Amino acid sequence: MSATPTETSPRAHADTHTRWWEVPLVVAAGGAIGSLARYGLAVALPTEPGEFPLATLLCNVIGCLLIGALMAVLTEAGRPHRLLRPFFGIGVLGGFTTLSTYVIEVIDAGTAGAVLVAVLYGAGTVVGALLAVATGLVLTRAAIRPRLRRS
Image (tube, rainbow, N blue to C red; front, side):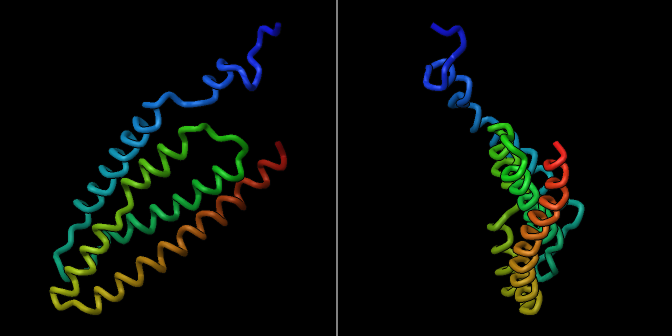
């Protein structure tokens, strides 16, 4: 018999899979970091209903740029650590970006009579987020592909 685990042995299986608590733990830790970063930006750039909510726009667009970059790294860079996506993608960036606050701020702007702000913010966030994901994906792929070819 072999002293090293085979791919079908229980030991090999245990070495490649997370314990049940690892993913929720890294998602929670990442979510705390992302949420605190979003809170910090909201405190630094406060707005009243009817004003353009720059902090939330920045969180969503920057978060989407980073999600695009993360997806490029995860799909291009071989075998990333199994907890990288849950920590950064779901946790940090999921906590940093916010759809619910965005929707409330669009409604608040419209209800406050700032219809132009509501329309520009509503459409600008969607367009900005889509462009940011694509930009993060393309730029990161362009940056890492030459390095991967050399290695």
